[in-house]
Structure formats: C-alpha cells, structure tokens
Length: 245
Image (cartoon, rainbow, N blue to C red):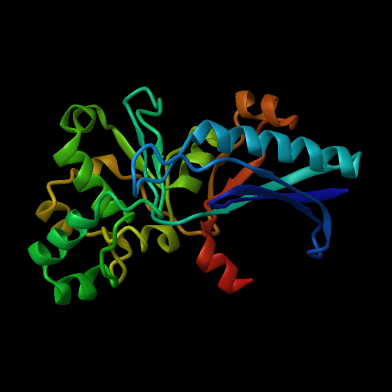
C-alpha cells in the first residue's frame, strides 16, 4: 500500500496524517508543544519540539497502518514566524511565532519608512507584529550580536522541511506573509529588503508549492522510521492550504 505522509505544523500542535492515492485518511495523530512567554507579549517555541512531534506522529501513524510504503511527504504550517540559523544550520534562538507582539513598534516604523501604498503595491499586505519583516528588524535593533550570527531566516514549516531534507527553500504562499515578498514578481522584494537593511542572502530560494524541495535524508529517515530518499514537497502556509482544502 502506497501512502502520502503529511505534516501540519500548527501553533499548539503538529498534526500528522497518512492518506492513500484517493485521498482517504488511513491514519492520523496529533502531538502538542508549548508556547513560551518569557516576557509579556512574547511568544516563542522550540523548533526541536516541532521535530520531536513529527517523529512521534509519524511513528504513531506507521504503527496504525502496518505494512505501507511512503511515496511522498507534504507539509503546511503556521505563518509569519521566524527561525534563525547560523552558518552551520544550528538554531540560534527560540522561534518567534506569529502571536509575538515584541515588534509592534518596528511594524509601525516599517510602515512609516516604506509607506502603506508602497507596501500594498509590492508586498500586498500591511506589516504587523509577529511578521517576519518586523521580527527581523527587532532583532537588528535589540539583539545586534545575534543578528551578526544569522545566516538564514526561515518560516516554521520551512525549517521543518530543512530538517527533513537538509534543503533550504520556501514557497509563495508562506513568503507572502512575511511582508518581504513581491507578490507580483514572485520574488523577494529588493526595495523593501534594502529599506530594512536585510541582506537577501539570508532568505531561502522561493520555489513552487507543489515542487519537490528535496529528499528525506538518512538522518531524518532514521528518526521517523522511514527509508531515505522519499521526495518532500515545498508545501504551503496553513491558511492557504486550508482554503484550498
């Protein structure tokens, strides 16, 4: 029996599902993780908790179906959050998720600096606290030593895919929620990045949501209880994929 494995990296839990080629659900699991609030208005999570939830969910689903082969892996996830990695791919700090409010002032400053009309024309969205644009500017201003170590800035589900494949990428539906993405050009907005002093090199390549972003690595496969080499799709933001579903 050939099945597709899916992950939804939500705000409070990671949902895992196995479906057949006709879309019938064969197994599903859900594993929760906490939101940490070290200061008022902050909302952080440990990416390692996401990974452990993916391992637990996969093994639970595989135990439910018994003999099965996994033909592909897809994923969706919570939008706007930021996972910062160093040059070795190690997580530098807890992930700042969409509910975080520490960057409220930066969101207002970005809107004043760039202009609402310009943001609407390019990014297609206002900037709010918890969006990647505002969070990155907050890190620049409030944690300059951390900022100097940043090699990659990833959205939550893109970090999970990186953990699965060791390949860095994002796709348009999630990139559109950063306020750094030109939705008309389908590329990172050079004018916005320049205005915010963000090096585009820290952002991953943007590929199609349905494209294969990489293959399951041997290390990730060992944790999940799967064979390596399974193709992993780019996936999509939870709001976009939910609307499509």
